[in-house]
Length: 631
Image (cartoon, rainbow, N blue to C red; front, side, top):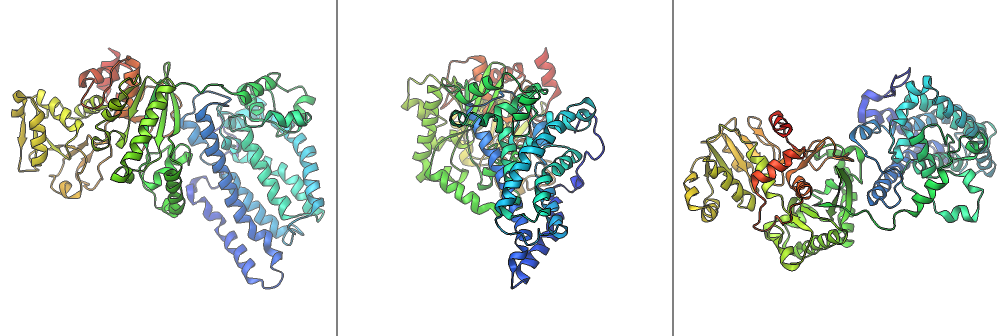
């Protein structure tokens, strides 16, 4: 919202949410009926029929610009504004498709009421020339002065401040305006289109091409990385007056009172509002950094389900900013997901998902291009290990102090909790962290202090052992119903603590269940009413019981100073990260010069105290930990 919202700020269909597309349903159905019902001269309704495909094309182009922009800003080489992007901006820009819906409605109406529109041809050179000339003249000129008027405090506070709330722009920032302001722009852009309609020179190429041109230039100017090559201007120097660059318009969002032009800087030069630092910023941005920024910490994750590809930061921003849940409508895009899975199989290369900052620490999250089901395949094991090892060596080459292994990248069967890479590379300077100590600490602090006994269930793992060890040291009785798990735990526990480990034949003696991997519906059905399921696994337990409480996988709330976090980590809420990811960050902050992988651990209490000291808080939030940290 603007700082002081004026009349017609909200879009008419704002309350409809994603159902807003139903507004177009009657128009789409009517256009399809008209197209198929006319046997002779069906070209008469071709424009009407093309409106909906044009809408889909514009949505696709918008999404491509989002993905490309986020990919390049994650690489950081030609990034223009290096500041934090947050969830507020993602939420504010969620309705970027509203203007596309409005355009489609106006085109459908124009098709009905304007003469010559319904039967316009594919191409008319006169109409195309008129559109170009009218855009360069009246449209650019009027927009310049309208834009300056919108920066007057009266209109700015009521309308345009909503757009300028985004200092770090994304392509879709360009179309984020209150409804009244967007209507004004549409009236302006209608000048060439109405003119060619009234002069009987319209064409589908002009009507659709003009929209695509506006979209392209809008997204270009707000993408936050410089991509217009310098040789463009070297070959044709006057082009600098006819075409703006991302860095040119970025200055308008950082300085506000310069570079007002729409797409052609010509009018800023004429009226003295051209920012004198435009050329310098362009030169610096297009040159970019000779060396990529060195991360201090790299967190290595991977894809989970086929749908998870759509939830990445590089994919749908609105989905990435929410905890992951399987959505029925995304199943319609299964063919796209399958193609993506095939491409990741062929072009196997770890890629950067996001970059963050905490204090002076530079952090990156990299993704191994493999899915959860592939980690369970013995035929994929060598390939996955090669990808992880290469990522570790790449991280060391870039100067990373720590690399943390997330999700299944630290599996015992896969790499012995990371020890495999230490054995192969004994001189490795980058420290490998599996996060066991902190994960155990988070689980322990989820167990009420008054608890006398717990039920431990699931497959044996490094985490289950150290969790049992810590509980037995606190004289909490650890009950186990699985004989194999009991034998493995007892074999490793010190003899003096084995008395606290009990093989039980009942699932009902404890209301606290500590749940590892391999627990399904059958085990859950045996739990008494009111049980608290506390997972210590990488993946959450499937919610099947309404009469029981399900806790999150081990996770922490990040400090307020944690920057550029605008996507959710898998199923976790906003600004919450897994304990395994947090462990790598804390390892670097503390400067610990040791690996935590294989059989090695940092220490449960040591990891916990360090996490709280550096501003991390348990999830769900515990006020007591905040008080502890501050004292």
